[in-house]
Image (cartoon, rainbow over all chains, first blue to last red; front, side):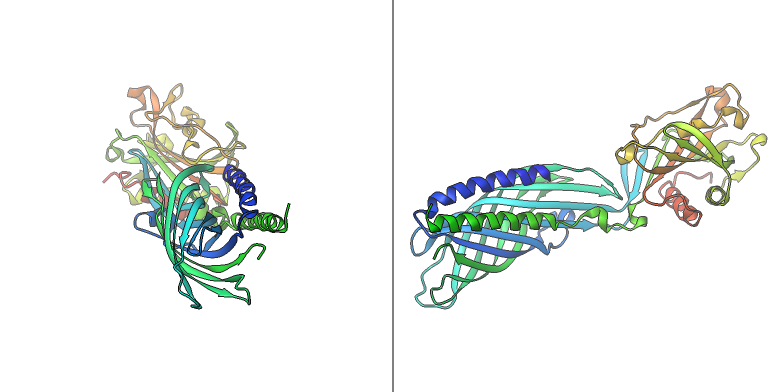
Length: 209
Length: 213
């Protein structure tokens, strides 16, 4: 986990420097969302059926009136505890234990958004696509005994739809909500992926507007 | 640096702080386990043994306390009696008959409380705790112990309970007392008389091969 935090801090620092260059040319839009994640298929075995402990953030720069480009990051914490069961370690070795999985996903992706112009509509729909890396920290416990510090960086992509509701006289801030699908190949504990649906809601504002 | 840049920088620093806060809100698995859930029950056995070929057993009259690999003491009190009684109950349910150790039992059964100060991973905690009992205790002076399966030996910071079933019936032909089965309990507050029946029951529950009929 420490390595994950360190790596993410370095990457965010790079984003900070990069955004400073962009900021001198464009006005950025900073969005912060609460995220609710619904793991799909076999990934539920490792992640559980849902995670209500998540946050997302994006920084976008308008390319023109309809297209935006920037970055997206966030954090999602997954946790599942299975009732006591007997696990076969070897032919001659069995363990009865409560099994707990704990997984944290911290994405850092390039993000593009298309928001068609609908005139003076109060609600602005948009499509988004992001791709990049996710730092995945996972640990599995048998009772109170487990392995720690399994941190990995994996490819991650996310596509979504949503709506933005501009507010304020200058429409310099607003509300945002949507749904997305996250693709995250990941091989651990017999899993092939950590794919999930996500729901998010939050706010955004223009920097320096 | 213009106002936009300053605003952008401050916002991103705030974002980093927000992310750190979110990371700190991670649900810690160990903080969401009850004492019962913290415990693990490990069994290991000799797959070549025919447990049905053994009919009688004798059990130690006390619990050996082994501290950092050294036999520290043998304890006989209400707690040790509770664990010995639980073993008696489950062994007899599986068809074994208790005899005095002077009456040439087929099996010897020991209970050991193990206390280590180092940290290990769950399935490496095994040691050959059965051999802390002098073979002479079972009437086999001069014999050693033998183990047909290997353990990845490692330790933990807290204690464990180890239950061993040893082969006395074939000790003479094998020139050693073979360990046939080991049950190990680890976790929070494991050595309590009120838990003896439950803990021994879990170990026997995951060892269906342990029966004479």
